[in-house]
Image (cartoon, rainbow over all chains, first blue to last red; front, side, top):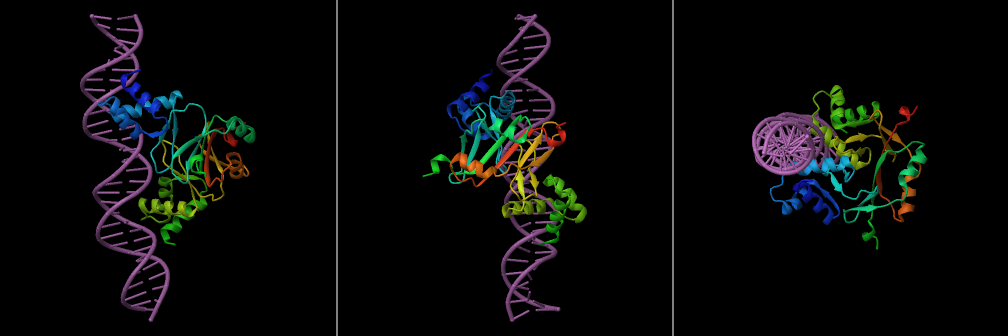
Length: 119
Length: 119
DNA sequence: TTAAAAATTAGAATAATTTTAAATTCCTCT
DNA sequence: AGAGGAATTTAAAATTATTCTAATTTTTAA
């Protein structure tokens, strides 16, 4: 655990959301001004490998990183554009049953209104 | 409908699969040798907008393009690595019901064995 | 405390994609 | 068929996100 990694974790913990590497870099700089982008990428990549962080990719945009370790799904709001967590209980099990095959992992991105934008 | 666009469509129709822009470029060159990458990107982007083609994105890899216009899901095989279509009937409707909100679109990528790799 | 291992740094490099402006082609109207 | 205008293609440069390299610093463990 280096100071740089601690800064990255602090940033992700305090601003729980779905950040791009660049956003995390800018926030982490406030904690640790000399930090460099490569360190952000290195740490994010290893955190993804360790399963501490999930990577969300949308085409045309840079990857986002989600510190919520519990498997869950994402809504990209058709109204405000934000990425919002949702939880479909036992989705992985249901998917395995339907496919007749053990699902190792999955990514589900839903384009609809997020709860805040539904009146 | 330009000759270049026709070549791109022909390539995608004859080699139905999930190609990167680069792969489509290489195939389209055989049909129309002077074609240029920007044309491939222009056309793929407008076809995606027109709903003729779907874009599949995986982090760390270039986008792939799928000419199957019917909504469907993708398996990325944990064994052979290929991208394979699957169809979960009425998935969008079921998702809308479960969320209590009209789903406009969704992307589901499943990491498991593809049918060919299941013995 | 010292050697080895791991992480960070700066900066260059890469790859995919987009942008720009100019040239070409296509379509429509007469 | 020919002119005019719109749309598309082209070539090249630019951009963006990310990775790589090599040197340096920090951490770990003996």
